[in-house]
Image 1 (cartoon, rainbow, N blue to C red):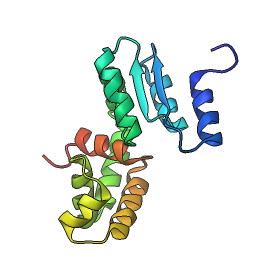
Image 2 (image 1 turned 60 degrees about the vertical axis):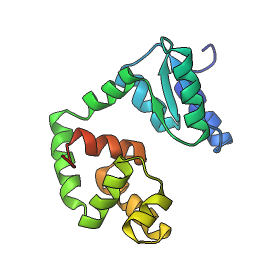
Image 3 (image 1 turned 90 degrees about the vertical axis):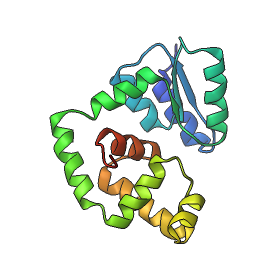
Length: 158
């Protein structure tokens, strides 16, 4: 981009219009681009080799508020999570979770909404939100998608 890169553009768009859903369409799949784009607020990250039907799915997912990542970008994130330093942080995060937080995290990995989780666990939606906040903090992740990836990568529910 001539004036700024996509990450800075995403950051500025989200700062000005926080409700806008940003999907990054790029040729870069390494962690130097994927992680900063997601941290800047992108809800989707797709490579330019994506099939048109998958791009449509990404747009629909973004409209619903769901993150959608290209498989290569997902692999990049998972590889990033496998470093030794992060492995010990992961163990600390997992051990810090209460049993109820683990139950909520399991429901998140199943793709359930706060409302569905509250019905499943017989707790209020506000309590679910409190647990989700605590989970994100303890696992040092920014959102539910990262929490789910963290749980799956660390084989928390196998």
